[in-house]
Structures are given as structure tokens and as C-alpha cells.
Length: 195
Image (cartoon, rainbow, N blue to C red; front, side):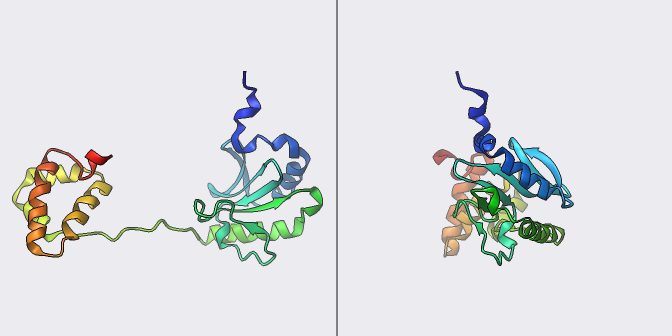
């Protein structure tokens, strides 16, 4: 039978670093952040926005900054734990209490809070909206088509528009529209059969 500590996920080593994490907590308690528990561990928020979290891993304990990408990091403390996955998150790792420098940590957290107040976040890349004049004409003539099209998620609408509008020639666009009209009316997404 699995013991309860097995499913703590990223906090499964927190007991190993109990004193160290309490030290980090005592430092963070001096800031204006509010402690909450998310994903089974302490996460500190400002105005409901995640600013920092702490946790113990196998070989180190860490404080992470949810929007650490914006920190100046003059002391070169922060690492991107998962290069491709996390755009914003940065970790500051420690292997002993001696490495914990309260003054530096408070400086970093103050900067993180300031960034939060300024609303610095990485916005997800937005796709350019595509307009299809031809499809709009068809929808103007055919209300059922318009209604059917509007039932699709924005993503699926985008797939249709992209498919029509990436055709170079007008006649290809028209033939593509002829192909997708029955699909739209039948409420079938462009790539549903491949999903």
C-alpha cells in the first residue's frame, strides 16, 4: 500500500528540508505576500496572483518566482527549471541553510511584487485574426450557415478560416469554401476526423 507521502508530487521531499523551508517561510512572512496552499504546498500571493512558492526536492530546496523571467537577477541566482515548458517560472535553489541570504531574498521578492503591481506577465501569443470575405458573403446569404459556424469554438473557426484563406488563388478559395460548407452545416470541425 502506498503511504500518503508518495503522492505529494513535488512536495514529497519537504520533510527532508523542514527547517530550511521554515527559514524561507520566516523570511517571506516579512513581505506583504499572503500565504496560501496550492498544489499541496505553500504559495505566496499578492492580490490573488501567485508570486513565489517554496518546496523541497530530492537534492535541494527552492523558492520559485512565478514570473521570475522579469526579475533582473543581478546576483545570477535564478534558473529556468524546464527550459521549454516554463516561460515565466524561475527557481532559486539552495542546498543548505547557510546559502539562504535573507537580504537578497527579500530584494528579489520586493522586485517580484513590484513587477506584479505593474502587471508584468507574459501574454500568450495571440494568433492574428483571419477574415474570409468569401465565407462572410456565404454566411450573409445563408443564416443557417452563419449560426452553424458560430457554434464552433474560436479555435475551430480559426482552422476553417485559415484553410480557406491560405489558398493563393480565388478559385481555390472558392473550391475550399464549397468543400467546408457541408462540414460546417453538419457541425464537423475541419480536422475532427484526424483528432
